[in-house]
Amino acid sequence: MNHIDQIGKNIRAYREAAGLTQSELAEKLYVSFQAVSAWERGQSVPDLENAVRLSRLFEISVDALLKEKDEEIFVGIDGGGTKTEFVSFLADGTVLNRVVTEGSNPNDVGECACIATLTDGLSRLLKGAEPRGIFAGLAGAGAGNWKKILSKALSEQCSTSWVDTDAVCVLSLAPDPENSAMVISGTGSCVFVRRDGKLIRLGGWGQLFDESGSAYDVGKDAVRHALAVEDGLEKESALFCRLLDELGDPIFASIPKIYEKGRAYIASLAPLVCDAAEAGDEKSLQILEKNADRLALLLRSAAERYGAKDFICSGGFFRNDLFRNMVTEKSKCKLFEPSLPPVCGSCIELLYRMKQPVPEDFRANFEKSYGRIELC
Image 1: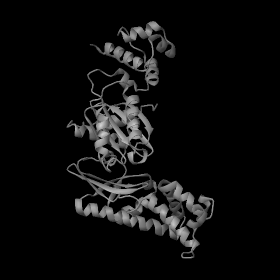
Image 2: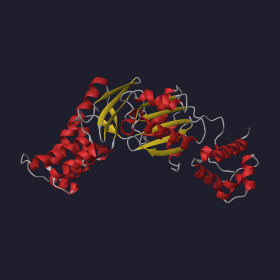
Image 3: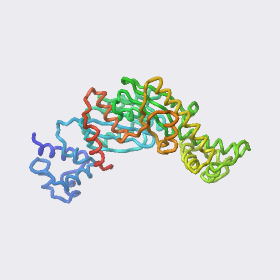
Image 4: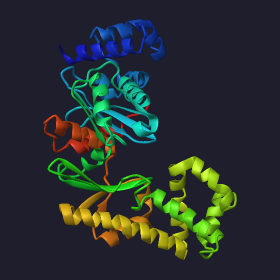
């Protein structure tokens, strides 16, 4: 079969998956029925303009539309609390299609909703194609039996499937994925080290036991300070005033709302501390210093016990330069942000687990093609 014949078969497969007749497809593209028929029979190929229209209509990339049949498709998934990203790609790193759906942390949404999100995302991503393998790095998957439960669910989509914590996606972006380290400071915080493929975790034991430099910890310290001011135990500060403005009510009156909205809301108050600290508020600086000290302790522990030196930093709270610089200075460790998204790491992890070589130009190919994909 030549390439033109294969393009025709691809168009037909995607058209049928979309539930369209040749006439309906022709109408949507403003071309004749005969043109569509000729494409599918391999007598001609769509020009660039129509190839782009087809890719948008089928919610795939032009590369996926024009791919050769013998090219194996792989799938990487990065699932978090707020969104889940799916990517289909070739072994050389070329991205074929990309889909983003709602969050898939099983501890937040439950088993059924998590599996439904994964199944729906894969259906939209693959359009009936059969992947060679799937790796899903999901937030919360490291707890309990989630790896086993969700791996079984994915195996119904593809027999070669793995599920692990989303930290693995980030660790696999390191130059040597099998020996890498990362630090997370978002709503929660923790440190991961991987040595010879073994995953080691420091911190990240949940809100009841952690006190290790997350946005939640910082936000909670801000509320504690405001309550201490109301109790006459601490002096009023700029942070106290900013927090009252944000809450819109006196601190005592706001407590029920804070409890109701929970951890994510408390974490959302952390930027107030950063802003006040940058303006010179002493109490805010103390709160940041305290949390940076704690997170630095975890980093130093990872460095001393496991030889980790360079840490990929992840999590929204590290976007604050003041806090990140504090942690770097106190830990004496090098923190760096990856240039590629975590879903690229999930793709690399899949190839490692399948014992397939990762080409030297994999990352370059991924970055180049990823930027061309239009999200549906």
